[in-house]
Image (cartoon, rainbow, N blue to C red; front, side, top):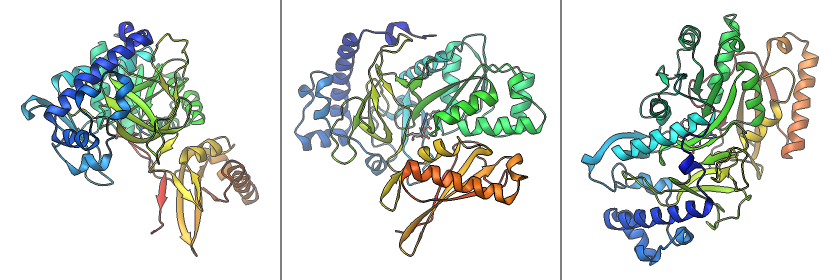
Length: 432
Ligand code: DLL
C-alpha cells in the first residue's frame, strides 16, 4: 500500500525540480542562520545563488559526525530554541552524542515518512502495532509511534525488553504488526518456543525491523520463525531517526523518501560522487528539515543506489540494504571484512543459531579472528567429532568467501548475550 501517492509516485523530472527548489531554500536558510555552514561555504567560495538546482549539490560541503560533535549541543540549530519541540540524541557510545532537534513541522514530516514506512507492509487503521523499539532519546520508539498514530492504527508503546510481557501482550492484545530490531525479533521467537508458544500461530502479519545491519538469510529465518512479512527500515538520529528509507512488499531495496532526504553515494577516500550501482558511503541532505538541517551528511553506512523501476510503482531511488559501516569494517590482516558477510555464511549452516559474535585479537603482530557461533540443542547433544566437523566446514566456507583464515568456535545454546536493542557483534581487543 502506498501512503502518499502524490509524492511517492511523482514522475522523476518533477521530483528533481522539487528537490532543486527545496535545496535552494535550505541553502539560503543555512547561510543566513547557521554560522557553521556559512563558514564552510565561504571557505569553499560558494554562495547561495550558486545553487540553482539539485545538480549543483556537489558544490556544497560535506558534513561529518565529528563536526557535529564539535558544535554540540546546539551549534547546528537553524531556528530559535523556542521553536524546538523535541530533542533526540544518538547513544554516544563512541564520543559525544549527536543531536537532532525537531520543530513542530519536523515532527509532522517524521510522522509522514513513518506513515509511509509502515504502510509499505500494509499497516492500516485496523492494525495493532506492538512497538518494541526503545522509547527515549533513541528515535526508534517515538518514530514508529508517530507514524502509527498518523495512520490511525492502535499503538502499544511497550518499548524494548521485558520479553515475557511482550509475548503475553502479543497474545492478549492480538497485535498484528511488530516493530523492533531484527535480532530482538529472533530472541522473541526463541523465548516463545521455550514457553511452548508458536509465534506462527499468532496473527502478526508484518514486522518492521531496522536500526542494525541484518542479512537476507536472517530475513528468511525471521519470516519463517515468526511467520510474517519482514520489512527492512532505515534511518539515523542525525537525519530524523527511522523514516529515511523503507523496503516495499517486493523487498528489493529500500525506497528513500527523497522528497525529504536527498541521497548520494561517495567514494569514502576521495569524497567523489559515485555512479548508481557502485558501492560507497551514503551521504544525505535533509531537504525539508527546519530544526537542525544537514548538508551532505556522511552517514558512514555502505550501500549503493538503484534507480530501476520498482513493480510497486514508487518512483524513488532505492538503496541496497546496508552492507556495513565504514567504522564497523574490520581489517583483518589487510583484508576488509564486514560482519554481514560472515553472517551470510554462518546462517546457511545446519545446526547453528543466528546468534554470533566476532572476537578480534592481535597475537605476535598478526590479527586473529574468532567467530563464535551458537549451536542449536540438537547439534549441542551430538558427538564432539560432529561439532569439530561443523567448525571446520564453517571455517572452509568463510575462507572461500573472505579469503582469510578464521577460527570458528561453536558455543553452547544461550552462551551469547542477547540484546533488547542493537546487537553487539564485534569485540575488537586489538590495541593499535
Ligand atoms: O537506529 C534509527 C532507527 C530506528 C532506524 C529504528 C530503523 C529503525 P541510530 O541509533 O542513530 O538511529 O543509528 C543509526 O544504525 O547509521 C546504520 O548504521 C544503522 N541502521 C539503522 N537502520 C538500519 C538498517 C537508528 N535497516 C545507524 N540496516 C545507521 C542496517 C541500520 N543498519
